[in-house]
Amino acid sequence: MAQGNLAPGPNEGYDLDANEETLPVLQQLRSSYGPICRVPSLTRAGDGLVLHDPEDIRRVLLTNRGNYVKGAGLERVRVLLGNGLIVSDGDLWARQRRMIQPAFQGQATRGFAPVVQQVNADLLTRWSAHADSGEPIDLTHELSSVALEIVLRALFSQDFDRMLESEGRNPFGLLTEESRRDLQFAARFRDLARFVRAIIDVRRQEARVESDWLSMLMQVRDKASGEPMPDRALLDEVMTLIVAGHETTGSTLNWTWYLLSRHPEAEAALHAAIAHAAPTEAPQDQALTTPFASTDYVEQVLQEALRLYPPVWLFSRRALQDDTLGGYHVPAGTDIFICPYLLHRDTAQWDRSEEFLPARFMPDAATGRHRFAYLPFSAGPRFCVGAGFAMAEMATHLTMVAERFRLVPVSTEPAEAEFQINLRTRHPLRMRLVSRR
Ligand code: HEM
Image (cartoon, rainbow, N blue to C red; front, top):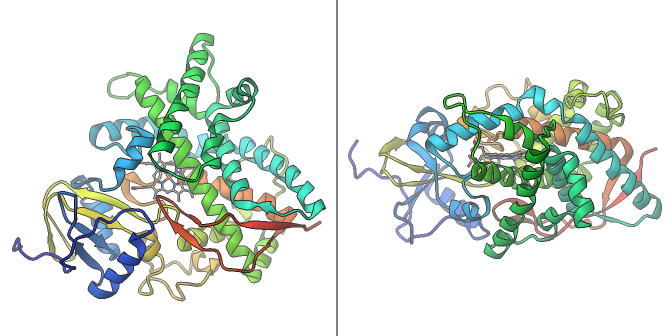
């Protein structure tokens, strides 16, 4: 391959990043230059390269993955999450992933069913009062809190209640109260690590092992060395799970209710589907997979919401060595950008791509679709470790709430999307709860 054969693109430079300015730039580049586009960088060492073709994306995430590490834009995340699983690379990432993965496998995930169901049962109790009074709820904030509580209980179990008691509040509430994700926030968030450290210390003193993620991470031994996870890594991973596990699920549920509230036919289909599902409000003996068993439609609704509004709407990789993508030369150091938001709305891949049609995820309807045309959880070895947990958690929430209430928006205006590190609604959604019983 001739070294000069670079992908087409503009002459002027631009630093692509997960922020508001980037989406219109990507849209414009896509229509001017097509499915692969090179963008000179203003400040970074290598050019940017935007990929829209699922085949090229497959090469980066899977078939030639050894050539790609985490890329541009990660500096901000590193300040927040240290060297946790989202940020790390190479041997450190591989070791940590091996140690963390078992905590997220089917059996372990199913063990958290009672936690997820109890948090949602408490939510329903609170929401009943709103349904009675007619007072709207701030849905966005409520869902962010529910997702945060689930992750904190899955991590700390009874130590979460102890922390609430001793502090008189949830110190991690900062995550739902503060929506900015700047350096000042990062410093305040990092300071919360002391609460995690205190819980770890107490468990060690008491030689206490719980059935939660923290104990799993404290107990696990590296297969090769037999060593436990170093404390620094343990803290980074816990902080990573808190952030990664709550913003994404909270935001997906927020968009899901928004979409359902504007599509009465989908809402009716959901009600019909869950009418046949097992009751979900008796927490103790049910596995998290229960709602999946008879309500494939719940999962399809969630998959379709994740297609239209993938929380991780843009992510990046960096090439270690030269490569070839789409027939073009890719020099070492190039920053690769993959945009699930645009990929999921690409008319070459999706019929009626702007419409909310959960049935497109019925098993038969999905045949022939490129595996790398749908990436809400990424793909390949760095596939979201919490994907199974997230889907089960969200399905449980949707089933339990839809069984009791309809959510009716206070405003009929379309919600505006905000493209920052995560894709969220720009303004909180306010909803009225209408009892279905
Ligand atoms: C709707 C919910 C979720 C979505 C859409 C989502 C999306 C993603 C995506 C796209 C990535 C890969 C990013 C990249 O390759 O650059 C990722 C990685 C990750 N996610 Fe999730 N996530 C969700 C829920 C969760 C939950 C519940 C947890 C844990 C409690 C979690 C923990 C992680 C971790 C630790 C990684 C890094 C994995 C690695 O690099 O090995 N996520 N997630």
